[in-house]
Image 1 (cartoon, rainbow, N blue to C red):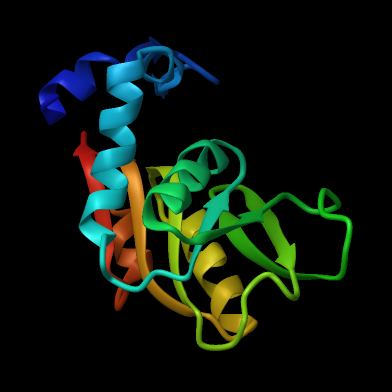
Image 2 (cartoon, helix red, strand yellow; image 1 turned 180 degrees about the vertical axis):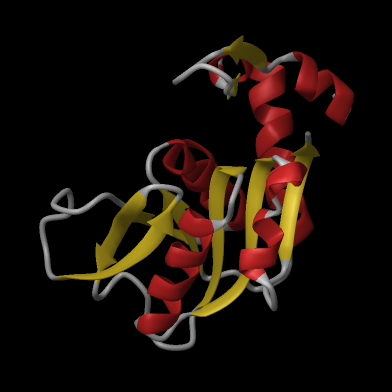
Length: 173
């Protein structure tokens, strides 16, 4: 399946979650076994044989892709979540939004010092969430090898917030 075929599997929903936003709905892709497999391949294959120890998935769609990528790479998986969702001691990172701030957490023992980590999420937009996830991994001693996204919204320039990081995006809009 080509990247054009993958793009055809993603539903475009205008004015969601608010007027003027075009939402890229991956649920239609997830429902298609060949599309889902190709999406996972597009995220995992660039990192095959790169010694990835742990895949970190960002809430919530990053869990879907991250866990599958971890399985393909023979790596472990750790979630990054919104505050108050993880049951043990956590580290946290706050980041700026267009209006206000948001916060992410991960277990303080989720990453062992020096582990090679691949961060996976469905979408790279402005880069704030991805930067916060990367900072969390580094805060507890992980080596962020790369960040991988199914979709990158190029016009929002999220890569600028990830300067110095290796960034992979399967589909670009």
